[in-house]
Image (tube, rainbow, N blue to C red; front, side):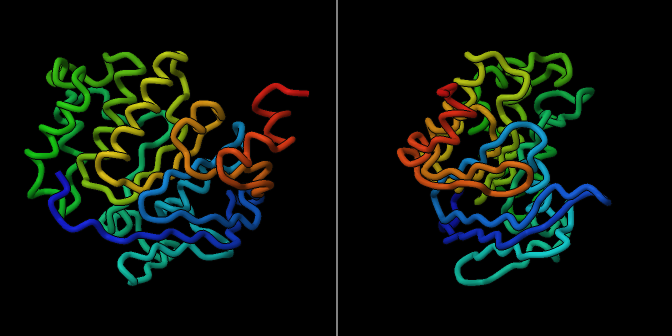
Length: 249
């Protein structure tokens, strides 16, 4: 898997404003991540995490600001590109709620993840990798995706994204709807994939403790604004974090 040379990637989000009509979901959001980092975007529901993910994928257009993906020194303005073009650059999204094709089999869902032109020559190799990395998918490859448990569907959603041979993996709320044990297993698997294949990961999550297990850096978003950011030790000592995420008064 990932035969080609590892590309140097940097994502820079600068002063992004976005919303839905009169609703302002993002207000001047700035963040960055570099090759090999795992960055966590932390916040409770309704604070703009998913909106930022959609902006990165070209699904929502910012009203102001810049989103620049630098690949080996070549700058790409994601705010001006279609979702298809962004995927073709090597950006993959594991969406909130998984968004699988419930009436297709596990294997059919995986194959649909490999539509990116540069990933098509590696379909069989990537498929073999995914089935090895997620044994439950190998056991159930002919089962309809909609009949699987929530945890199994989350694994399938991650594997489907991996089928596109991504360089930048966006993961939106991987813990939603899962038991604590399945959340832990999912986060552990993301770390394994990141470490083994030098993936660059931006993960939107509200489970602070789980996110901090794999994050190199974190941003806290409240009401569409980044209110604090730092490395893991810094975040854990922040009073806002203690109050909102760690239950410390």
